[in-house]
Amino acid sequence: MSYVSYQTRMAAQATVNERVEFLKKVYVHLGGAILGWIALMTVLYNSSFGQNLASSLASNWIILMIAFMAAGHFASKWAFQMGNPTKQYLGLGLYVVAQAVIFMPLLMYVKAIAAAKGVPVTNMIGSAGIITGVTFGGLTLTALVSKKDFSFLGRALQLLSFAALGMIIVSWVFSGVQLGDFFAMAMVVLMGGYVLYYTSTIMRQFPIGSHVAASLALFSTIATMFYYVLMLVSSRD
Amino acid sequence: MFSPEPDDLKEQKAETSGERVFITIFTGIICGLFALEVFQDVTPARLAMVWFFLAYFVLTALHEIAHAVVARLVGWAVVGLKVGIGPVITRSIWLGVPVEWRLFPIVGLVEVLPKNLHAPRLKNAAIYAAGPGIELAIAALLTAYLGWDIMLAPTDSYWVAGLQATALAAVFGAGFNLIPFSPQPGVVTDGLGICLSPFLTDDHFKRLMVQPVLDQGRHLLDIGDPKGAKALFNDILVQFPTLLEAHMGLARAQVDLGHGEFALMEFRNTVQALPDDEQDRGRMALQQLREYIKTKQ
Image 1 (cartoon, each protein chain N blue to C red):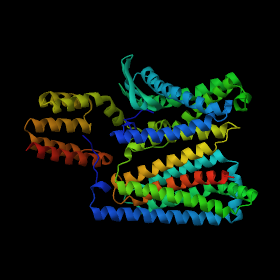
Image 2: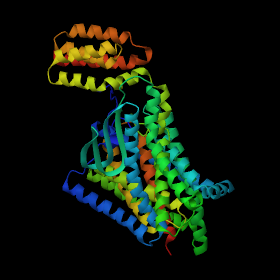
Image 3: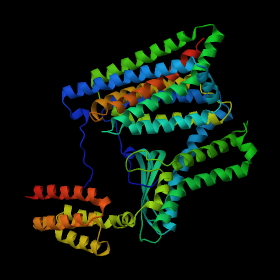
Image 4: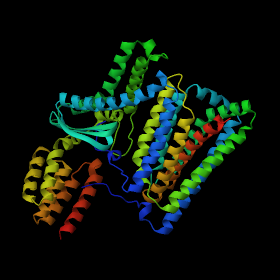
């Protein structure tokens, strides 16, 4: 016998109109998060504060990652606080800021690579953005149109993410281990799996009204995918 | 960590052959790329990644066993030990404890129950601390064996890199488990378990102590023996007169014996007498009892 009472309805139990409205809100919030993220990165990238931040973060990578994981944990916890919109938006906002900060060292690295190759840095970032956008769009469309339930991917995604985390930790600690293109490709495929998984679970298992949390889940996937696509693009000759 | 079974230990399986093919190709591509990354240039440092995972799997098992051993040492009952997620590889009984091994040993859990109320908070904290404790002890032993300088220095030796990776896995496992947070409702890390232990009430431990008897009483109700269940719940209430779950069980038994109105009145009185912080739980249980009575009419 359970003492838990469920007062919220899952998207799968809602009417078609409610579900369409819910999905609209999810993607509008996702769009807003992406725009906010781009704006914040642009400001940081063009400011001396951002450049100082990037160089100090690059030398304190482990502390940065711990702070990033903590931010991710609290952000998703707050974003799931049903009935408390302020905390939900605070969660999404915190995560957008954390993602913008964590991107600074990579953007500075890409800037240096672009300068060495004599290529405008905007070309590299633009290409990575287009590849990420097209991949995300294609996979989202696949999940939405096929209406296939991809929640069976959950266990595999969990295990593969654990493997990726282990490799990242070893590469930090052991000097001489630089994770390269194969790892970046694996991460892009892994994030593709997350797009399918989240899109189908948002349509089924997320409660109506949890659009902020749903957009945060998708945003985290896009940002990580973009990170590794940008690494791949910048490593091309 | 020892706690009720978290959701992430419940299986999300690929059910159709199409799903199985998809998941095989998907994981195959990613694992293949990971393998190419590790083996593209075989050096001790790169092979440390493989060592890290192998060591982590063994350490996960040791972590859970340490919880169980300390629980036994302080006189608590160990009712189950599970290591890993994914398909079950084997089930066995070790020293009277049902043990379950699964394919991917990256998390685990131990179910323990107190047998008495002697220093339960301290014992609870000690059991939580045992898991990360054994991992930190292993890391410390390895560091003592290699020496601090070698432990932190780059190496050309596969053996030293292996020991360094083992120590890293131990520190990572202990460190992660000691971060005080709740990964999902009802589940706490060892760190949070230790922090919360001093604040747990006697009622919490009483509930744990009588859990097997409560389960037995509910089982009697389910198989249609309300008289037996009533006797059992009455016995529990002699020892623990304020235990809401036992009152609920007794009320259900009385409903099954045809005394619904009396059961509802008694239970309402019980809820009214609960302390303020228990009122919400009591009201919810009262509502459930009303619904239970309706199903019986």
